[in-house]
Length: 61
Image 1 (cartoon, one colour):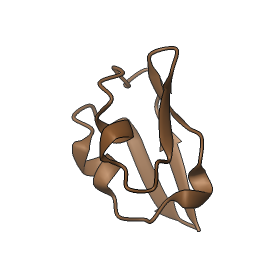
Image 2: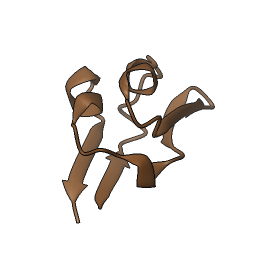
Image 3: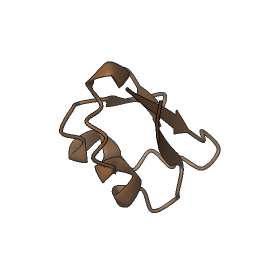
Image 4: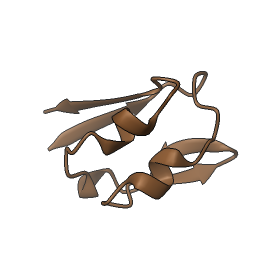
């Protein structure tokens, strides 16, 4: 299982993680990326690679 953290202050709402995530884990809510389907995370780190602001952390639990 994967634990996803988003530093809201760093998130610019660019939508890259939302569009790039194969598990459809994220949605933009109030112009910020929000984890809505964390159980669907594949642990592929695509979101981490796409986030230019380094706002996303994915950890194995």
